[in-house]
Length: 273
Image (spheres, helix red, strand yellow):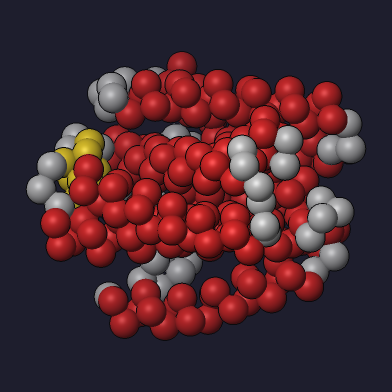
């Protein structure tokens, strides 16, 4: 399993980095859209939507919602409003993670709620990444920063959790995650954010504000991971899909980013960077 994960990572990481740095804003938006469609297909199975026509309709609704978001993406009022809504969604997600039995029954009300939640999170994450990539001040590098930040946080959590993990973070949702792993994620990402702030030559108080935004982003990325784990546990599956050898589905790879991207963009706008 580990060899498959490493092999897949060696292929995917360079492709992702090259795509972020060299695709045009429109090309990048389309690429992220494809990833969100794959994630939406897997999300629809976790809802669950059983019939293929219902799942295809779910994808079409996502495309329509994304097209609307793309049309209004130049409006600062629209983007800021959607980011506020996204923050509210993720605050609710934090509450839901502490109540893992909530929504476990397969009812029409729960199916509708999970479907709407998935659409909102996927569209907002897509918009956040596209807006970030379109920034005139080296937008692609900012996207690369958030990606590397999440990757480093995941790695820090994995290695520290494996070595020192004792206290379970959310045993009913994801038994393998520990508070020590969270500390490892924060420690590793703090070092990276500190180095990047120096690289940007940020001055106080923007220096410390940038690091704080990065750490809050990491905490929400953990929430994104836990939210998908909750959906999978309620559904009784280990992975959201099998598209990526050793890694599961696309949703398994971008669950942290669904929270991290909009939270990071929200925080950057909050501190005026």
